[in-house]
Image (cartoon, rainbow, N blue to C red; front, side, top):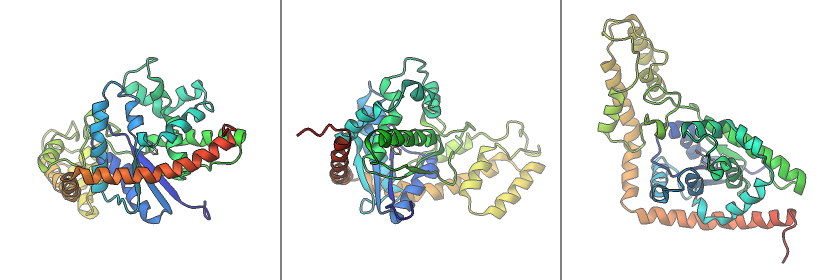
Length: 335
Ligand code: TRP
């Protein structure tokens, strides 16, 4: 990839506001990469959002603005990153249909990401076909722009793997049009939830949002999972698996003090409230500038929608070029 152009693309499903897990898994990298990339795209993946929300289009529609606000607040810059809405680039849907022929049902059912999401949602065999096939539409999201570097959370790696299989099949049948894509996960590829669950996720209700107020942060931290056996201040406590310490390790820059606090906690004599109060301040310092920038952008939603409209125009130009190439390769370029 050395002499190739670095084209970055990533996206979010607009199913809710974004949280700290999104930040450390992917947003941080998006913001960094927009300065290094030859081209950078950010997609509001509303069509993907609909794959498990077909009955609730209002939810998807209203969250388009929310995820755009979250990304802008974190420093995504429309001058550097083409920000667009998936459904407004119909070429992506067209490419999805063509890619669907390159994937078997058995392979789709084996995708570990989709499998675990299906389990979380309790679908069993009654999974919407659009949901089962979302990795295929994600291949189209990525490849319409010929992007090759994809900042994502760790949970998305099996999807990226499937994208590369689609690249291989496509190129084998129709000639070399697409390149393999690489993922880039954050330093913390998966953030535990406030309840100690392995993953921070809206559906598990264990999130701290990038837009949370000081009061919300405080309440969530005070309710955080620590060491259930650490009942009295003098009891020796466990640091491993203790969410407060996990977060302090990530968000508190004073490593020495944290290491000292851990020692005390393990020995006994350090109460949960002390470390929780510290974490509240650490997270507030982290989130406050994001929250304030978000509030600024939120004052004028029209400006944000204009950014998305302008980005969508540009994304669509790219998509049309790719589709011309693809149609020719598949011999469906009749007129
Ligand atoms: N599936 C991703 C998620 O749930 C969102 C997404 C849609 C995406 N299209 C994409 C990510 C293309 C990277 C590239 O987080």
